[in-house]
Amino acid sequence: MRNDFLWGGATAANQCEGGWQEGGRGPAIVDVLPHGERRLAVMNGTCDYRSLSADTFYPGRQAIDHYGRCREDIALFAEMGFKCYRFSISWSRIFPDGEGERPSEEGLRFYDSLIDELLKYGIEPVVTLCHFDIPLALVEKYGSWRSRRVIDCYLRYCQVLFRRFQGRVRRWITFNEINMLMHLPFMGAGIRFEEGENELQVKYQAAHHELVASALAVKLAHQIDPESQAGCMLAAGSVYPYSCRPEDVWESMKKDRETYFLIDVQARGEYPSYARKLFEREGIQIAMEPGDEELLRENTADFIALSYYNSRTVRADGQGEASGGNVFASAKNPYLKVSQWGWPIDPLGFRITLNALYDRYRKPLFVVENGLGALDTLTEDRTVEDDYRIGYLSSHIRAMMDAVDEDGVDVIGYTAWGCIDLISATTGEMSKRYGLIYVDRDNEGKGTNERIRKKSFWWYKDVIASNGESLKRDSEQ
Image 1: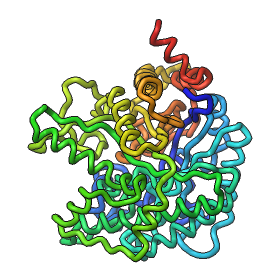
Image 2 (image 1 turned 180 degrees about the horizontal axis):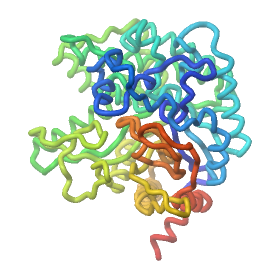
Image 3 (image 1 turned 90 degrees about the vertical axis):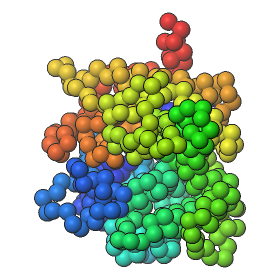
Image 4 (image 1 turned 120 degrees about the vertical axis):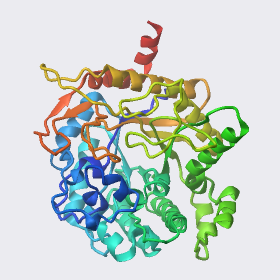
């Protein structure tokens, strides 16, 4: 791997920060995502969170208290040798109502402290501006990204952050997994639906507003700090046809286009022809303002960030189902093992995905999420023997290295998702653990929040120290 390769870990404010009523923070959509069976209905915008009972438990409100323990957590990241740490900023911690002229100084000081602590250890901050974390006030006042007015709110928020952290943060990601807006509209973009309305129209119009906002953020980042880079991000993964039957192959191509659509705009600067034809067929009218197309064309992303957890398999007859918090339906692939949550484990699919993205966009790639959600057991000697996680991460990192070494893919960094245990975005569970660091907290929010190093902690430390060479040694033994 390149000498300046960015090894590290990733979290998100809405899943780890907590402190939902501390430091002047305003409510955000994560604060109304419940634990339990109604979570999915709220996330996809079909259940109004205001209808939930008063005794509903909202796991994101406390999360793992990264807000109160970030120095302790960063010290552990430094012990592993992180070169970078990807985290997100809570918009409502900066602007409690999502808008206004005066940001919260207390909120800015918290992120000042976090960033300075990272830099003290030589860890580069990689910041996601919006990670499923819309201020609830913007949902109530404007309907979130339904309204073009939210673009101005977002740009004001970006302007404050770019100026405040100029010279300290050089890599920004405008939106986390922007394509999730199409699958979980409320979680992804704060979109709720009214009965009988055209949901596709609402989602694609909201997506256009996010695309314009992203292009404006890229432009603004370069204006304020010409040394900075602003990237886009997608939830990625290979989509296989169930068979060589042409109808199955065509179905896999359509699913690929669903995945790539928004990134095509962010990376190539224009709506793809297949998207325009989709709009015609479905009667979707995208309200654009003069200058939108020029803006998108002239302010493409500097790099492509991606998450990869698994591949999926599709059939033309639609057979297949989503499982274990995975919102993407998939037919069973008989050649792959699955995780405890039913997610296919496919490291070669990771290599295929990296090649597909690099061939399509010819921009540097940044793997900002990859990991295994699993049930962990704390042993009597206060550790977790998570060889299954080591196996998953090892095989996927080796696949990434093959994409670089053998295929010529330009990958600038890798941040293991959930480098510390946190709340699952899709299921709201704490038991679905991704971390290299165990957090003593359960699904009901009980526990001490103590941090405990897992076996994978020491393994990843060796991977980073050797710049990945330890994996080559292991494979040769």
